[in-house]
Image (cartoon, rainbow, N blue to C red):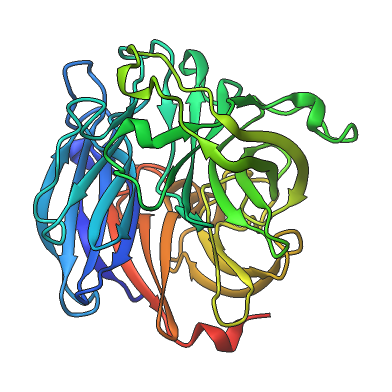
Length: 392
């Protein structure tokens, strides 16, 4: 298997690599980030996982160097916007929603000390509500606004506790100012939405949403659906906004744990769709050339293993509803028996970008020595050359 290794972490450290984000900067550099989890990883004063690392490549991903480490930044997306670089995510596992800015290509970052410097929506102490959660998912730019998906995990109850929300700000606003941002309603997953013919599910819930614009101009939030033992499904919420959505004037002075209720920004359940790899985190982007929507996801090839992540594939869709397999990108080549391969190998939490005629992608990889498929020991960089030739 060919890949460039951005970071390796031995499993003996009991520290694992999570949540990659990847971006080609306007100066030509590649920047990648990830965070750390596991019983041996760095923790803050609340005993929570909170550390992110930044890496740079100046040779198109062949080699990588460590740039810096950022404490209090987790599950974050890289975004280049109006000449500056941003990290948008949370402050820790189940933390506050925070944003940082870099004006030197990622070498140094601002600190979200308060609502005027990047602390957008405050979370509670440790696992007190609200418990904001997300993944490195895309930021949608539409009609002069930026949109990104988050969740509030009520009671820190993974699965059923997730309430989906979307935040938005005007493109021309000060993104470090909490007063620039508004939040939608927090929509809890309702088991009544599930098809009646499905079997009983193991803790159904949704998370790690992708805010995308449909061909008709609507805004959808497409979320990973924890639906075991059913596989290959995703949940779709419709995001509606008045013209334009308005942030609350009290946003700057919110008390800890107090959320903003958006005027005009709202989510509602739309449907459950067939989505290969919907049991794991995925990223959806639209190809500017063909108009097709693309996703790199862990399609399930053996229904005995709902959490299977040892295969990664490229899928395309004309409408966000019907998805077609285009190419298998990664699959285990270690010669392990199938059951062991599913147990120890994972190509997961992929973030990817268009890069000219190619697709570049970063993988949280559990491979060749990992503790298990989930607890990744490598962060790797890959390139699919000439992706247009394989689209369906």
